[in-house]
Image 1 (cartoon, rainbow, N blue to C red):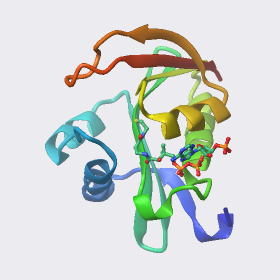
Image 2 (image 1 turned 90 degrees about the vertical axis):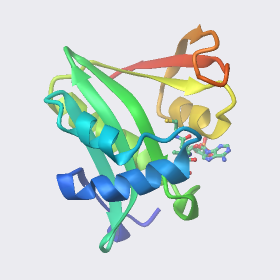
Image 3 (image 1 turned 180 degrees about the vertical axis):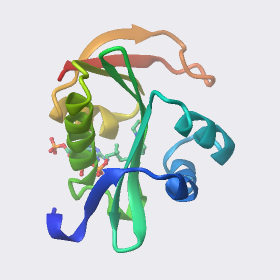
Image 4 (image 1 turned 180 degrees about the horizontal axis):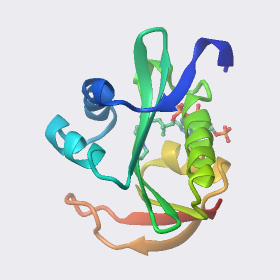
Length: 148
Ligand SMILES: CC(C)(COP(=O)(O)OP(=O)(O)OC[C@H]1O[C@@H](n2cnc3c(N)ncnc32)[C@H](O)[C@@H]1OP(=O)(O)O)[C@@H](O)C(=O)NCCC(=O)NCCS
């Protein structure tokens, strides 16, 4: 990945439309703009983005609670995948969370989501448990965590 082409920053209110668009491209059951706006307005939320030029191409929706970073959603625009952007976004978001006093990161991921599982493993997340039939369609979730 050529870093000079991409910027990373905390998301702003005006990014929510782009995040909602990406969410719908990246997830089977995307959260709608209204839900994203509601989550974004929480004092515990941290949303981050990667962009190029004027365009947002990747995002995370996370919360910082007590000393834990919880990653609720993360996605990279399909045409920008497999270029190291997901890994960069995850690492930079964790760096930001560490600067804000977080000591642990965790998330849930679909068992079938091998791309995301590989990304999280690459970033140092380890499997801590399994939630049976966690998703509405009956699929199990894996709980992954990492000391940060
Ligand atoms: C998961 C996702 C974020 C990965 O983003 P990305 O920018 O393509 O990932 P990167 O290029 O940074 O790759 C990071 C690691 O994941 C692996 N990976 C990425 N896509 C993969 C795929 N389709 N199959 C297998 N491994 C994959 C890469 O090989 C790399 O691991 P490696 O260095 O050990 O080879 C992206 O596929 C996506 O947006 N998926 C839909 C949304 C989603 O599933 N989000 C996560 C759950 S909330």
